[in-house]
Image 1 (cartoon, rainbow, N blue to C red):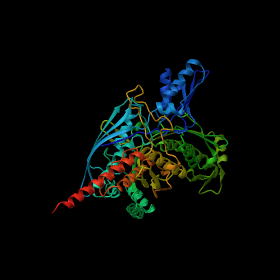
Image 2 (tube, one colour):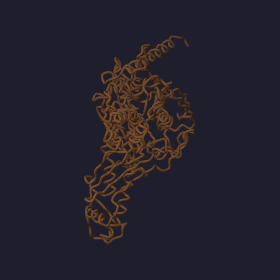
Image 3 (cartoon, one colour):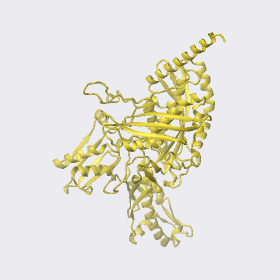
Length: 619
């Protein structure tokens, strides 16, 4: 049995929107939303008007993490209704306390499980029940639970499995999407199982994990073949080498033997995370690319920017495809009257869907321009190349600039704009049977974390973290590096620090959140950042069929933080005797770690007492 808590998004910008109605009764909404199309749908429904009378724009968000996928719509509808009734602009913004109190969180889960292993340490069968704390309404609880069930295997092959999922209605905030969208909850159950069972099998957790990795030809529990499973071991082996793991394990063993009150722990954990929306219809994106007579380019796409660097990547995709300098391209705000019917910027799919649409639009323009360039250069169209704003051909000595090409195309009445579209091919999902291939690909990674724990108060320090992560051929390495580091720290916060406390009294305030501010709800700060933090991309990891071979990097790194919790388990176990199975609460706060240490020491004392008693009994 294992129960673990949710997590507050704590985005920098709280829920906010601005609504006004123009002289034509057109409603305009500026909203901090991850899903402008759905905001448009809800507002039009509340006002009783067609969608074409409502325009939603998202310039940027001050953070989202899933908390602005579903929750902003109601606030936008309130503001729009006020603007419609009064004829005046209406601005709505929650202060921090109201935002934390009213908005949904990551779903907490309760799990029960039974698992069987072979004598060789291979998983034989798993029977688990996952119960999600949905709060007072469904919100996105059903797809969150679905993804949790699809990710309970993590990177391990489970040949026989039965997973039952349930949603509990509770008198609390309506829980919602949060980075990982149920995936972290499902994977945490499996990692907790491995960490608890390994000592009982007489194996190290590291060895038990490795013995159960997916191999070529194996399918997930929902019958999707696992492509490139060798990358799990590639990340694992590269990380063991780069982090000097085996030497550090020996050093830690020696340190713990000489230190009674302070112990260290080291753990390595893998990640396998499916990329795409489980609901196949959501896997589509749109874009609009305009090339002006002077050669400058304006790009609009359906994704929203919340600090993850999506807009920068879209600029890079457009500039790379067209063969022009980055300074030539500008990005316009995301608007529903420019790109309609888009999906939420969620499920780590923003770059894949919108990047595919931007590239599609640019390719259309490029095909037309090649015909024009062929006439100028006197060469076949298929030989035309555009690089850094210079147009050339293999069989021609002539060159022209991008600006000259565009000017010529304009006077030849060539269309210099295109609407791009992308749909992820090969996906199918039967929800009633929980079978299909819902994911385009899997993102892989592994992390090693080292912690130091104080026996007297359960406090701990994250000494070092090493990560190897599969990002494919990165579109923007610095952005991906930041996403990996940030995702890891956010995951570590969820697993070790961020403690949601609900009022359990019999007073009218029962069910309300007690940790309503930064003073009571603690998120990671500089003191929680590891002293040494090394991040490396997996070598030779081109992903065929994705935008320029890249992979999503928004959500998968969060689950690398499992290594922190498992390192704490190893350190706590060092206070007990060999073979001691540590049960660790989540979040593993210093208080929780302290009581786990007390339990480990108590069991060790009990085992020692039993051994002494056996020595007294004559043979």
